[in-house]
Length: 87
Image 1 (tube, rainbow, N blue to C red):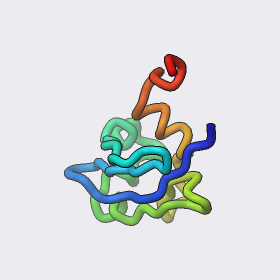
Image 2 (cartoon, one colour):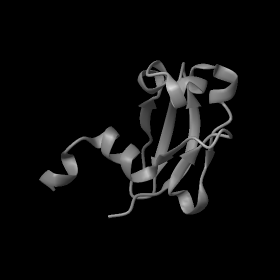
Image 3 (tube, rainbow, N blue to C red):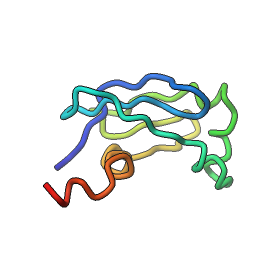
Image 4 (cartoon, rainbow, N blue to C red):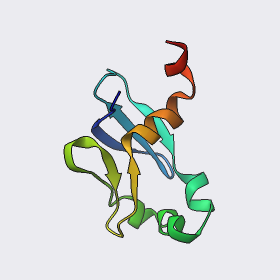
């Protein structure tokens, strides 16, 4: 199943609430561990840069101005773990 992001809202610290099309409630995603990896993820640790996220074309990814993108499917799997396999 292809997952899409329909809405995003800031949450405390380096977190975002993501609403996926198939779910009525948001999922809290913490991006601090990704930012802590450094490298291409390092800009996420700057709160002013982190706040510049946008939803990509057709809700298929989350993007930042420096061409950093996170696939909606990967974010959904990270948030839900292996629950999809059990269904």
